[in-house]
Length: 195
Image (tube, rainbow, N blue to C red; front, side, top):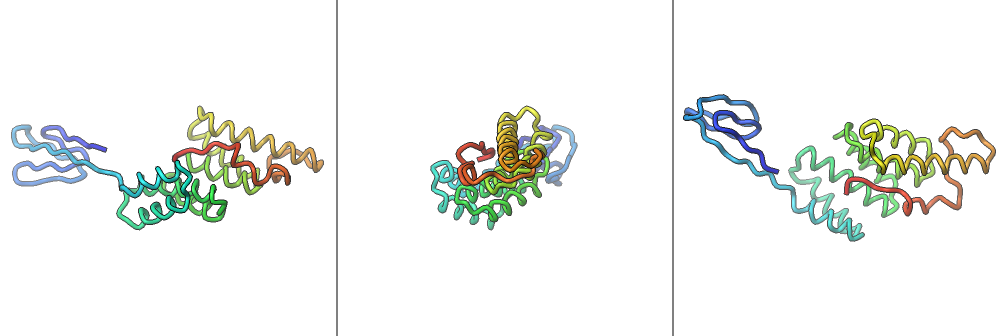
């Protein structure tokens, strides 16, 4: 990510003018006195490598790199993304408690981002907690109403809830659990976001 400054104005960068400087603020000086710098922020190599491993399905190695990345000096946005990716990795490792912890951490650091709501909904869906799954998909849809991923996952959760309730004879309210035949295989049907 590159952040540029204009002559005379520093916007989230470093500017030096008339013997002084401002970092992360706004400094207005005559253009003749201002120096312009380019600040380059690079993502951690651990994140890039972790994501590549996650894409290839090398989950243990991806988790290891992501955990190391969290111990490094990451931006808030990078910590959010790492926690979201760890949620997905732990989901596929079938460690749902750790997946929920990471989704919760991602939501805490970025409550206005839809992806961890989708991914946490997927964890709840796989655990058979269809009511919580639908609630998370709804939260995500409030943030990104045009998301086909959220809409499809929500529809799947509602379908499974209605099937489960038809089989048990309980009213359809979206709060039931998945039946024995569908539990454990939902990860093949849901869509993930953010990795």
